[in-house]
Image (cartoon, rainbow, N blue to C red; front, side):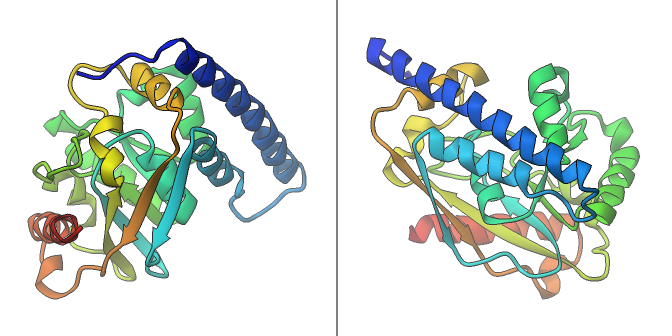
Length: 250
């Protein structure tokens, strides 16, 4: 069972939230300036915001390897909300997320700034529409990241990868690659994991209350090739196998 922060932890979390809000204001100002200038390239401010949030929360991000150039789908294990700023700090990826987040006004607004693609993960009747939605997103955002476990784990083992989340890439469009990503929190993994009945806000505040910094290593593994790209089930199996092999070695 996760412990609630003590008084000093709550004060630390409060101070970090204030700094995060200031950082949000600065990033929105930068985003607004880019809009006024008529910038044609995607603004870097949403990526800067996410990576800054992780650092303010006391997270050190270490990148190992690099994203494959060109169109890319990053397939990662899922442990905490920190996964998103960690991947954003190392890539230009937008994220595929479940539509439950779109029902939370503040979160939905922040997600929209980073071109998040929402999908209804539990509704089979909407699969065709979701595939079209994701493929349309690739036209403007060539790098997408998704978490095929569909939920978070404690990081010591992988859950089953849901191949339905890869249906939009079956068959694989020309010029697009699938690259597994292993997120490794080391000895802090089980402590920061968002699992069980813990509310998302509680997980956020508990991590922000930590006195000691932590490190997440973002491992960009070898992109899938050959038979691993034969279909969505093959992709899911191969990506999970690659991440599981890295986790086992680690």
